[in-house]
Each structure stands twice: as C-alpha cells, then as structure tokens.
Image (tube, rainbow, N blue to C red):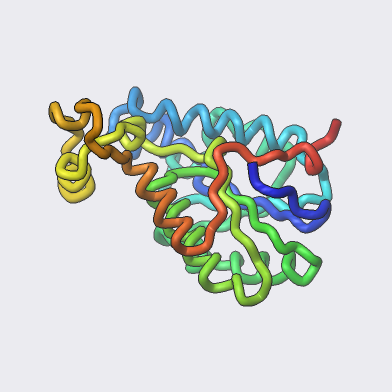
Length: 219
C-alpha cells in the first residue's frame, strides 16, 4: 500500500479499457485465452468506478483503432456510459500525444490534484511508457504518478518468470517459451511485468500492488 494522498488531491486515468484488448483484433491475434489478466483488471476498474466519489476527476483513454475494437470493453461499458467520463484518443503508446490530455491534466493540477492514479492496459506497454513520461515531465510541478497494479493488465504470458536468456528472447522475438533454468532453484528469474514495474520505478513512478481507495470511494 502507498501512503494515502489528502482527499481531493487525486485524479484517475484509465488506459485503453476497450474491446480490442479483451475480445477484439488484438485479443484475437494474441489469443483470447491469453487476455484473462486484462479482463480481470477491467472488472476491477469497473468496480472502482461504481464506488468512486463524484469529485474525483477521471479521464479515460483509448487507442485509435476503428470499429468494434474502439468500443468500451464489456466489463466497463455500462458504468462508463452511465458516468459519461471525458475520454481521449491516443495515436500511440504515449498519452501526452493525445489531443486534449495536456489540457485536462493542467486543469486538474490547477484545481489542486497532486497525485495521478493510473490503471488499464497494458502494463508492459502503454501503462509503462506514459506513466514514466508523465512522471518525468511533471514531477517538477509537484505531480506524483501512482500505478495501481490491481487495475492493470497484460497478456497472461507477460506474468511468467523467466531466466535472463528466455526473457531476452521473449522481449526481442515474442517467443513464449521457458527452459529448465527458469524452474531451477537459485536461478534468478523475472517476468516482463516485473521488468515494466522496475522501469516505472526508475522513472520515479510509485507502483503498488493494490492502492487503498477507502478515502476516495462512497461508503
């Protein structure tokens, strides 16, 4: 758990809660059975949004993919439609490139927000890239980015610990395999998600397994 920021100082950004990553083209390409971590994280995001206090600013982002893949994922569609949160389309992995994001962030920071909570997908790509970029770009203005891993997801194979050789092969070629050394006691192993967490922390991002949302949700 991280220390709890003062009430009223938190804003939330949830990244790419869309069909592409659960049942659309991206998921089909990877195999829908490999997206269970993402679907579970989307369900937890929906559960948070149901209870989140109305004065907590929320922004949603989506990758600029057409058709069905742009639709909100089934896990979040009902609550997102009901709440009518503002959203932006990002052209790549960096939300700073999305039209309207910088203006939204500037507005909430001027209102007193000092902590930006982040969830969504994928942990190893968009969450990692843009949370690190935001932290580096805005820390001098008093903003702290906090990634709640319980609200984040990645391909299931990105959670598999691997020896360094298998990890390097996976990161370079996408080869989803392990060797005997990966299961040998005493051999150091790390998953792609672990790698992403380490990268974010090196950039100054606070990364927690599960943030304590108690002060920010309705009782």
